[in-house]
Structures are given as C-alpha cells and as structure tokens.
Figure 1 (cartoon, each protein chain N blue to C red):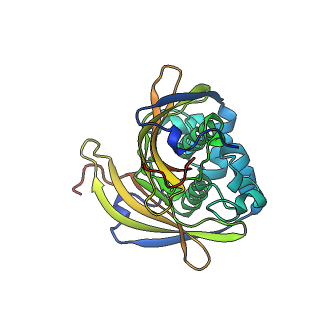
Figure 2: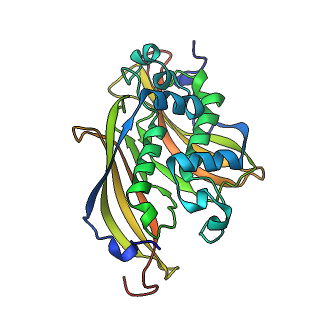
Length: 153
Length: 153
C-alpha cells in the first residue's frame, strides 16, 4: 500500500533525492538511441557546439530526473501519473561523471473538481550537480489519489 | 554540411516524419530503466490505473518523438539544440504496437538579438497514431544557425 497520499504534500515542502552517478557510457548510449546529435555522441564533435563538450541529451536529463523521483517518492505515493509538463529548462550541460540529485519543491496543491478521489500537486523539480548547481528545471502537475475521497481541500 | 538553416523554416510549414513501430518490449524496457511505475510495466497492474492498460511512459513518448525528428530533419539542419520545452501534454496513452509519426508545425521564427549567427524556430510537435489521433504534444524553441549571420530577420 502507498505510504503517501495527496493530503501529505504541503506547499513549500522541499526534499532532495539521489545521488546518481551519470556515466559517459550511458550518455552516449541514450543519445544513440533517442537523440543522435553530435554534442551528445562524441567529444570532438561536441567541442565545437554551444555545449562546449560532450553532454547528455536534455531528454536524458529529464529521464534521469524521473528515475530519481520514482525511487525517491513516486513509487511509495498513490501517484496516478501526470497530464504533462508545464515547462522544462535545460540551464547547464550535464557532463559525464556528474553525481546528480533532484530537489523537489511543492508549489501548490488543489483538489480535483471533477474527480473527488484525486488531487493535484504541482511540483518544481531541479536536477542538481555536486555543487548544487541547477542543471535542469521542470514543473509538472502530479495527479495523486486522496486518502479520503471528497473531503474538503 | 547541413542542408537546412534558420532561413529555411517558415511559419505555418507542416511536415510529417516517421513512421516508427513502438513495441511492448521497448515500452517495458524504457520504463524499467527510467520510469518504473506499474502502468508502464505490467498489463495487470496497468488495467487498474487511469491509463486503463499498459502504455508507454510519457517521457518515452517524448524520446521517441525526439528520435523521429532527429532522423526526420534535425540531423540535416544546422541545429544547435534547444534551451528547453515550453509545454508537454500527454493526451492519450501510447499503446504497444502503435505505429507513430510526428507532425511538425513551425509556429514562429525570430532572429537572436544577442547572437547574430543564430535564430529561433518555435515548433509544435505532435505524436500521432495510425488514425492521426494526437497522443502527445510539445512545443520547443529550436536554436538553428543562420545561413547568413546578422542579416535582417
């Protein structure tokens, strides 16, 4: 049974999950499968790009972030997925050998008008490097089952 | 040498790329690596979720879309990446066995104020199923090198 429900998420709450080491091997393998652009595949080609050297696909950053929060709290939460992502910003390159973490901030919560058993939890997720530099940000409205359906928001 | 530059993208232009068959095997493999939630891993568990059956992770949909556009036009374009994604909407589940395509619509183009060699091309990308049903939408401002740096926008 999930430990956390919609009622357990409070605006302003901050948690940090991880770390996870991101290797050159996985950066190149991901890019070869999903985003085969030179800056994600080869150091020499990457040196001449805006990234200034080999770096992970932005989509790979998102996927690593997803895995960290799945292990961190989603899989012990009565999560029902998300309708999408409001915004993704790839602020700094994710380099091989970086040990990343994810900082999760609850921005707001609201009960669903149409589904009394569900609430929304809008979160800001930040992918951090070892120096707390923010590499990627994304905001997403998670759908989470309520402990008590239909109770007041 | 890239065939397409910033000047070659015109607002309103529509192209369709693909198809690509999405298998159950890859849906489950992706989920196991990046998004290990029941609705992406197992038919029986998925049947009781909002998705109503096994479906790809939303991030997997984005990654498949990325690969289709990389093969479709990005890798023959003087692309310099993207600063992020403005919005992602996961509208319908991506089911095993779906043959997907991507419809790309150029929403707007503008020259960069700070970098005369670059322009932005804001695109709407739609992941389509065989019946032209829209599964996922995302909008992103691509950065693309200009054929003639500094010429008027």
